[in-house]
Amino acid sequence: MTTTVATSNTVNEQLHFRTCTLCEAMCGVEIKHDGEKVLSIKGDKNDPFSQGYICPKATALQDLHEDPDRLRQPVERTADGWKPISWPEALDKVAAGIQSIQQKYGQNALGVYLGNPNVHNMGGMLTIKQLLTSLKTRSRFSATSIDQLPHHIVSMHLFGHMLRIPIPDVNHTQYMLIIGGNPLASNGSIMTAPNMRQKLKDIKARDGKVVVIDPRRTETADIASEHHFIRPATDVLLLLAMLNEIYAQGYAKLDSKAATLAPEIDRIAMFAKEYTPESVADITGIAAPEIKRMVKEFCEAESSVCYGRMGISVQEFGLLSQYLSMVINIVTGRLDEVGGAMFPNPAIDVVNSSGPGYLGKRHSRVSHLPDFNGEYPVVAMADEMLVAGEGQLKGFMMVAGNPVISTPNGEKLDKALSQLEFMVSLDYFVTETSRHANIILPPVSPLERDHYDITFNGFAVHNVAKYSPALFDRKDNAMHDWEIYLELADRLDKDAPEATQKERAATKAFGPKILLEQGLKYGPHREAVTIETLLANPHGIDLGPLHSMLPEAIKHADKQIHLHVDFYQADLARVREMVQQYNE
Image 1 (cartoon, rainbow, N blue to C red):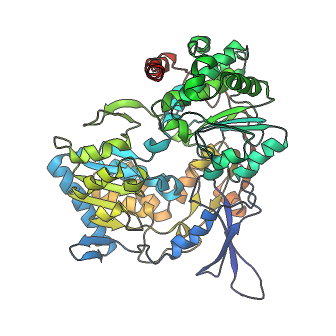
Image 2 (tube, rainbow, N blue to C red):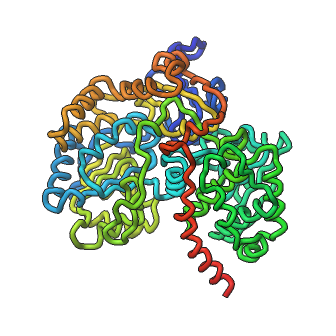
Image 3 (tube, one colour):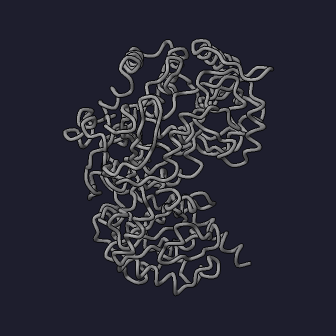
């Protein structure tokens, strides 16, 4: 919503309120403009979530919008460089290129990669399924496997859905154990929390503690109560020793609500029996008395939470480490308790409108890596393009991503992309990745699209809802992401079911806001949060602090926590091998 401000300097000066979409923090911004140009961007003090805080990234919303290098119409790569072409010609050529690849080599010879910006895009999130369905390929990849996949697998196993991820109730905890995370730099990360510096200071101000386990001295470690250096990639041993010590010191709370919902909880007592603090001290670099003291303080605190993030996810034992961090929260009675690990309750419940996820239905052709929810790990992409044989990727679609820079072994992927027969990139810059495309389709800038945060309200440390209409109307020669998706879907899947075609037509006519309305109508706050109430509250609507959600939050049919002990216990064999290598 935009309001006019009477000033002595600029009669046309107006204010527009929206959410910054450049990271997970969902900071509210106040944009001063004259209807055509941004005059300033600052934090929105009336935003109930961020309360005026922004980081330096927020001003980049103006930079992105005004960048002279930003593509504003489709371009085609030619021998003489990039050539502008019209939207109808570009969309027709892209559809023809995709169809040619699939007719020659099979449907799965086309790959698709979804980059991180997709989840910050309301229209994209609500319509991307239409595009993916029309592509009819199983060769799918996304940024998920770069840094957060263990979170999703653990949540799918324990709570019945890949997006049902408990997050730290940082606003109320007395003891926050951060393992392999740097929330001061990320403003959370699988914990949407603007102004983490202040939130961590607040923990200390209420006589609580912030304890960081990290091999690096990070921004978060600098302001923590304690920082323990750990040998890289040995976090799994520390977590096993902590779990062992919880039982040894008698701190397991098996009568807590969460524990009573976990039928296999009795088996956890023996899970880490081999790993005492003394047995892991020399390998991890953290002394046994320190491990025991951390466990004692964690368990005796009025409230506490164990938060493991990227540092324990992107290593050999990332999945087991994330499992152990969640198990520690469960056995100490910290899951679904104020100040512990809690489930957000967003106005749009993506969990109830999407599949739970699955692991290992298929495996990648070359490296035989398992898929997750229909996506292969990004480390498989390059080989799938370079290694000849049936199913080799010959064409590719990049959607809002630059994996040559952001994924492992970018040089190899760069080489692989250069050998494709056809590639299209949906991006508004020529990047290290999109430079390989035959055609680049550029969407509008973030300030030219409506926004409601579909994804990150599900990870927010306080429940809120906020809708932001576009600040600027898109130009006549520009297209929204969702318009591009639907136009391509129409061209690629002309024989789609009638219901699908009707949904596409309705979305084209009314925009993705019609899909947003449907989501709100079936959400848990349907009476308080509608398009009308959101428009009437441009700063956002406060839906209250995190609160107990068990057993309702569990998506398993039996409403119980499935610990999958056998699955995770099997991985302890590799842990033993690691310990033997260190001890040799």
